[in-house]
Image (cartoon, rainbow, N blue to C red; front, top):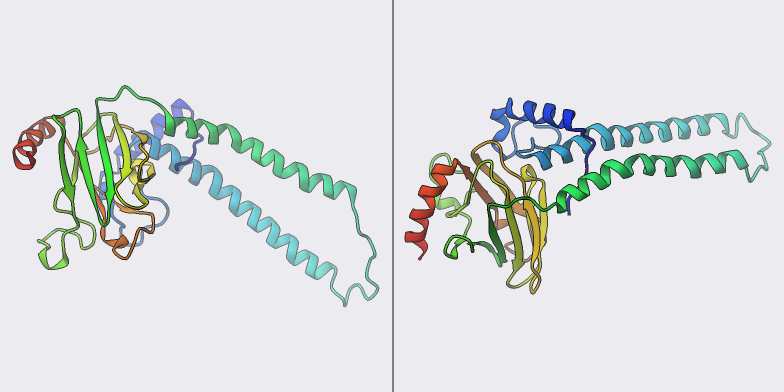
Length: 266
């Protein structure tokens, strides 16, 4: 589902401040020469990125470099030329203890930030309202049960119908619209096969399963804009043609949109 953290309250505030300072990065589609994960749009995504960038990635690099150095040294030190008579040693108690204890210690270090972030992904917030997301072959349906059961379908815009400024294979006719700085409960299900609703900038990747209703918290989004995601489950031959577009607007704009949408989709 989702992942990880290493932030104290102070470092989280610092990371969030840095996030807000990079407003140009809030276009959630890939950027030229982009490296690493996309910038998080809420506190949860910032936590996930911090765990990956500050803990997991350095740890993986350190382990990989150590193993590479160890392999090169072993090949050199115990080559046939340097050891015409091979050693018959089969056990080394201290080495066996070390290569058992060290991985356990590494997992122990990862346990606390991992569990803290896992808890954050399941945390109940003081939700303003609920949005139900339904996966279909091959489009999304969005429902607002707390707003007179407003509902509509969201299809990818065909390439021939794209207008200037719209993104190929990413923009849709009816994006999901939500207000900024608002905690929302997301519910997920599907009508046919497994789909997956994934928006990296929100720290969300949840399977939509037929006959099952799953839930995930959407932490408040700090910056208005359009964020993109994709179905991340192989759901059929048009799997790559059901993108996700989420439009985050101000609270006043959301109220105006609700009135228009109720008239349009009623």
